[in-house]
Image (cartoon, rainbow, N blue to C red):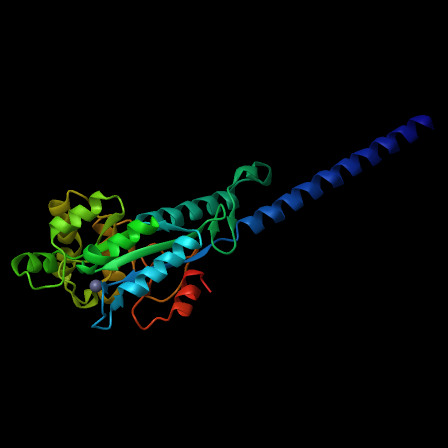
Length: 288
Ligand SMILES: [Zn+2]
């Protein structure tokens, strides 16, 4: 009889230990899945910064300063375009690992907070399309003042045209190289001659991806890692050529937030012009 009691006691202890253990695993899994909900942030697409805006894509120096001041004061972490791609890749790798390893091995996964980002960081990415000289003349001083950085999407044909004719409001390769040397800029490719990529034939697609990349490399000694579609236009064929040219990701002007589900070749950006109010800007950068 005593032996039977002992057996029951053992069984009871076993059941209790099992319950405690399985409860712990469950709560661990729940807290991990909460941590890995993902992120959401914005990429800003600027064109030209001027003292007095004159066309639709311009932004005034005062407005640009106010926006950059806001990002700096509110603790945003600036990313280059290639770092956005790296972040998306890193997240999808972790998520893949998360789904495929057993729960016991799951403890070391880094956490992503729901509203903005890994390790409590609020991300932002600043990009300038087309190579306007307002970046060199005005924007750079402001980025430097606030410790921010940006990606330059350049297309060679307009830079060569500028170098032939001083009246154009674009940068020269000499100026672009000077900016890159500060460490505040990453070079990106914006095609060769800024066409509607969706209307180009195979030869045109090759020229505006492979040749554009090689030309930028030749004139800056830097290989652009990412691509921005001129006019934000793309289709499967365009993406195929962008991938074949070796770009690790490509950027659109679809007005959406970057999330964990963002396709590496359809990364959205918000165009920021003089028509965007400061209140709207604050909403955009806070991904609201
Ligand atoms: Zn453009």
